[in-house]
Length: 175
Image 1 (cartoon, helix red, strand yellow):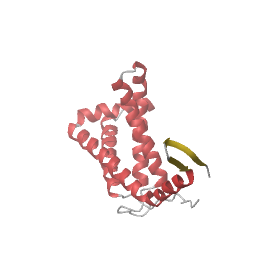
Image 2: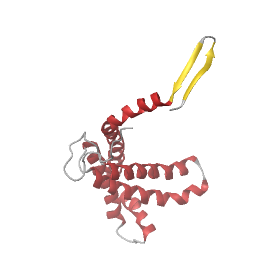
Image 3: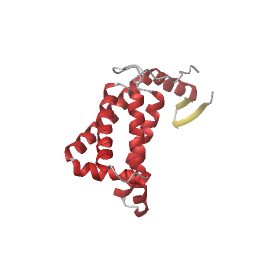
Image 4: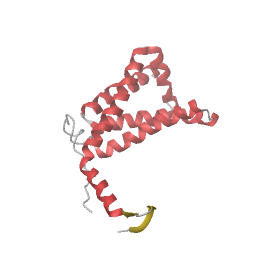
């Protein structure tokens, strides 16, 4: 334990900083891991529902344009269906995250969707405007969150249909 004593901020006010006390305070947050996963799931899932609903409302022409992203991986046809699949993945996957149902499969599907979106937008980063760079980093960030949820699960707060929602399997440490 590191202890700093005798440091004075003002006359006659001694400061005693203990990293052990700080670690103890953060260790208490470990007991709230499932609540943290719940908040993360609801906020990110709600974001997916919002954008999925916006995309589903735009219609087939927009789905075809969105589905054109699969050309990057060599699929030259079926853009309408790929775009609709990506849109439904966002809408339904986001709803599953919010509800805490099948969190791992939903997160994996969203991870793949966002990884492809980031790959498509990577080329735009060369121009370096704020809009083009954020257009890349948004799906990349969402993919990173989905990567984490794929491994962590949804925590204990949710409807937890077996096999996907499930409690976090991260071992708790008692240091």
